[in-house]
Length: 404
Image (cartoon, rainbow, N blue to C red; front, top):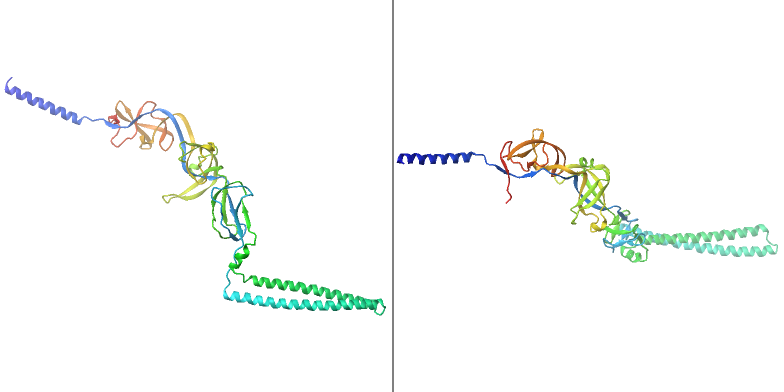
């Protein structure tokens, strides 16, 4: 072979290699994507919300009168018996300190009461003297009447005088007792708080007993101090009689009905608990969310169905997650929400057809926070792109991502 032919052959090979490289560089390469195969499975539609446990019936013991409540020795969790366990005691309040003017008036009232008492005792002495004189007159009149010296009328007058003087003595004694009471009342105004503490030891306290059997849930007034009538002291209830209250958005609460099943989780145990909706309260209230948005909420009351032995460590005021089951089905064709994207007014997915991504509009049914039911558009066994990116379009070559 001549040198010219060799040069032609060499340049031809180089040209072919360059052309092959260019063709290889511009051939579309498959895009690695995550795929899943459409299968039938179970699906549960729930309304999820945080809930709080509470004792069904909480009894609040309050002070029946104004007074000073003694220190409550009981502790939270102590067992109490109805009408037997004494929880608190209330004794009289100490008198207030008098200012100088009030103290001067009180001492003046004492002196006036003492003077009135002296006057009343003098009246008693006078009445007693008059009574003794009337008694002697009556005896003399009876003696003269027996000798027929005095008439019957004069004897009756003597007896009347005696009875009148006797009544006057009783009146004087009663007046003296009243003046004595006034003196004691005037002196009572000068009793100091220190003297009141000494006297209160002899005064019986008002006991407060538990109205029901149960345990102490909360002590609202532990230390000794002055309380007013109606002030709450202790909360009592039965920790075994628990319920769950969850405040749902009003838009979710309209789909909840009594009797629906509830899944209780994130309560601290290893397994889920079973519950049942007992009541949806017929009124809503406004609650400000963590983002500062006003929301209309409705309380839903849930009862435990799982035996208490499995959740005995739960008590009043514990936080749980309540998932109220609105619908559940088996053999449901479903796919994750991450596989969907909007195609104008419809929902669509990318289906793998022989290594090529094909856009397919789908009709959806019920959905949860993670997946949705597919009614039409794809069928069982087809592979769907789970996380379509902006690189995926109709007709793009794709391949399943390899797990390393």
